Length: 359
Image: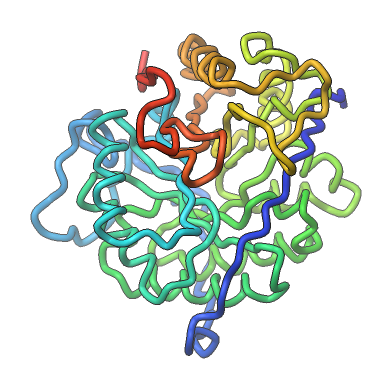
């Protein structure tokens, strides 16, 4: 294993509060996915599948998700944005920004980051995603301030997925994260069991389950059983933050670092679909977001160069691993996480951003 794969990431403490009455909701498994159920069936080709650009939401909620989702193999190149929800955005703001992601950037997904413990918040996510024709990578956020808050968040989110009739039509996957292996959120075998229980709970909704983790998280936890998690998850939400590599310099020279970790996921990922879910390059440094290489450069130009580099690799992302890889931009706005946003704090684009969604 090379030093290039050893990302040392910043830890940001996010405040959270228990939802009133949430702990009383039951977490009841049903049955396990059959393997053939985990691969979406062909949906007649683009754009007649969700969430392809050009797809039109039906006037009425469908009866089944069969033939609803686009095939994994069509999901490569730019997918959408990580979107932090710690601010507990209003429904109006969610609707506005999800529509912006769809129409301005041709995003197909939002990948949630952080946590909002406001009652009914995931219903607002579903509402905004349905209106904008966006899929969602949902997240059970562990956090650091309360060792048990993730259990409440798990139960509340699972209940919402079952109770909201639109939820299964916009929720592509349920993630445990972020970086639960690197952060020692749970012992690896316990985390694998939580993935299994969530899969059993969501079988009737046909919602896959994964964790959101970097290669190094799996690698350094391997002696404690991290590959049991790789065996259990339905597909891979991988983190790619090459700025933190000990070999980082400028973004335009970061491809060997990126490719090294992609190769690890391809070689160890059991043939599963891969997305780069938390993926970016910061435009500034501050305490907690600091490089591990004296040559690493954080500025707006390098943030732009990183996404240009990925965009130029569209043909690679279309075929790598046999199923292609889709990548997200982390993150939507500097108001969500300073330095990482495509939008600055003033609401203006920091640089031109129009990555390819197919090639």
